[in-house]
Length: 239
Image (tube, rainbow, N blue to C red; front, side):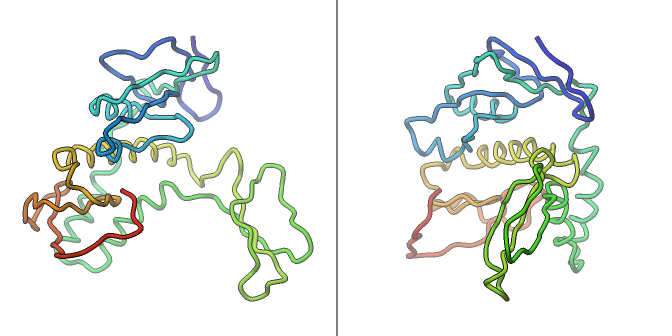
């Protein structure tokens, strides 16, 4: 059972009674993923507070032997992108990334900065900023994301808002959950063998009390050794 969305979504909203056992089709699912009894497994996975997961996240959870439960409540539970609506990451990003990555390796100034800006532009919020000293007024299609006194005048409110149904500047933001899911899956694969030795996980790295290797000249996507610290304590940090 499915309904074609109107407009520029290029996807199908579907309802399903059960998850496939061997292959998850491309899309976003409404499922409950139950944590493991092993906390060192749980740190390798990002659990969603609203129970939305990409197909890559389901593959990731399955690989970690986490229990996956499809939500069946007479509401759509699957946003499907058929093959004719897809394009590979390499087709979209590889020329840009490799060009700048090679410049970065050659020591080109600002190459890394420009490379990192791609992520910010893809998921850039369409935020509005306004100042009001009497009352707070926003449009019906907006929600307040920040409200505080202005730094220069505490009698004036600084109000930041987002569009409720269109929070991002472009539709390229639809790529974000899929890119994040792939990144987390890849990081998990790097960390799995050393999960009992990891003390902190960063966006694209981690702190580990076991030497994995000492290579600093690595290819794109490989782990790079960034040094060690001795006799330290990590405080106020969750994995």
